[in-house]
Image (tube, rainbow, N blue to C red; front, side, top):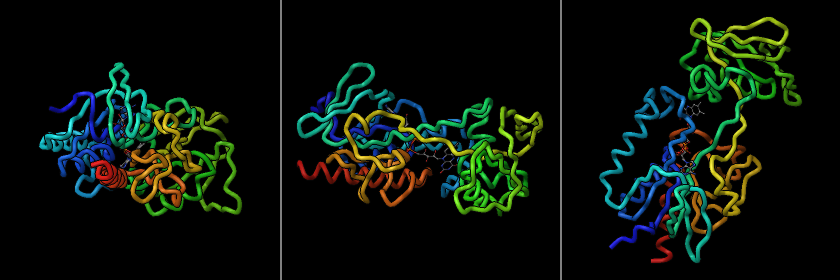
Length: 299
Ligand SMILES: Cc1cc2nc3c(=O)[nH]c(=O)nc-3n(C[C@H](O)[C@H](O)[C@H](O)COP(=O)(O)OP(=O)(O)OC[C@H]3O[C@@H](n4cnc5c(N)ncnc54)[C@H](O)[C@@H]3O)c2cc1C
């Protein structure tokens, strides 16, 4: 009989990384429990893009389809619960849920993603994922030929180079930031700060601190990324300079038996997480494979 307080693989996260890790475990009939507390990075996005065969699919539909597929696998369970703590427990791990319940696991896949801290501009949070975004691959094409704003001079050379072929016109709002050393920019710049963002005529009106305003179709911003969950700290995992969990090519963290994939982790060769649904799914598959490889060392 299965012990209800034990799972061979605990997968924390029900975004593309965790869902794919669960599918991978199910394919070879490994017992896995996926925990999902319902806080997805792309929660405010109505249609995701740059996802082959799902270009334009609502992220919620994508997750629902993945959940439906998982029901075919009798060794995989999904629990809509929040994990509060992960710690080592002998050769394995102990999870404590916010309900107080505990569960042991031989391997843990961390797929908890990141939380975006936006620049503190009033109104920005309300349009995040809709008329404000961070990734030209996800969000630019729908605004082709229109006036596109970039908030902050520091990221403007990179973003304007990517958005150049998309935008009809680009505008950089400096936000008191300097261009990176040695960089030049052949794009109009506004030295004032943005004090508020509001919807206007299908796009955005940006109020500036000199009393004027600028209208754009969409605004690109650079959020600060934070780990969504405390498990990297609790387990003492090594980090990259970006703050993300350091993994190797097999999704292994610095603690044997703890795998990671998706936005919370990346290879040291990368400057930051390669954040996308496809990349997260691929990383979840690798982490799932490595969790099984870890079990094989115990079988
Ligand atoms: C505005 C915006 C638009 C985007 N648009 C696109 C796009 O068009 N195309 C694209 O490819 N990518 C897009 N992305 C990026 C994409 O959303 C991420 O790369 C992807 O969601 C990462 O997947 P993940 O599985 O790592 O994390 P997430 O999808 O964020 O999932 C994290 C999971 O962990 C769970 N979790 C966290 N903590 C706990 C806990 N303590 N206990 C239990 N569960 C927990 C959450 O509930 C959630 O299920 C966008 C991102 C943003 C911010």
